[in-house]
Figure 1 (cartoon, rainbow, N blue to C red):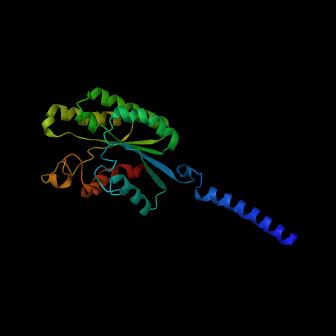
Figure 2: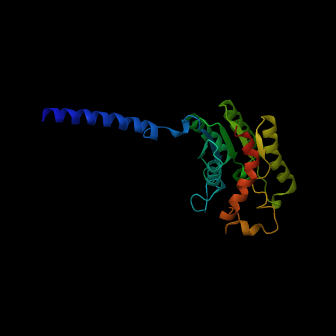
Length: 222
């Protein structure tokens, strides 16, 4: 009886040890973002990236993650987008996000709400510059997602707004998506690609949005 008990105790000890090993391997208390061989793409955006008005998993960021998986690319995606966020908000949040996730790539999709709120363009440019510099200093490759404003904002404002993304990308060697909503907002039948508010793209538009980002982001995933 005493031998059987000793064997059982020893067996429990081995099982407990194996359980701890399994926890380490399969992620209990383990930060998967730092897993060997897996890099992180951090997306910092607004409602266009936060699946506003969409069912979960249908936005372009989720579609990006699915594409990476289907192509067996060793990247995971962290979506740190917040509906309504501005470049000021993104700038204030970014240092903590960089420290936590240590991304290899950062996608910055911000600026649209700056324009909607009539914020000064030089402030938007300064914020995007600060974010790009911070991400680059953290050894991440940066992709800026450019936006454009509707014609009713005036041709001068629209041109200046679009060009600020180009300037920041060129000055700091970041990749640039010229217009995130190309093929969605700039087509004759644009209404069919938007939700009822006519501001946020619908589910059918998000694959097109990913196709605008992918040719710019894909060459960086080395």
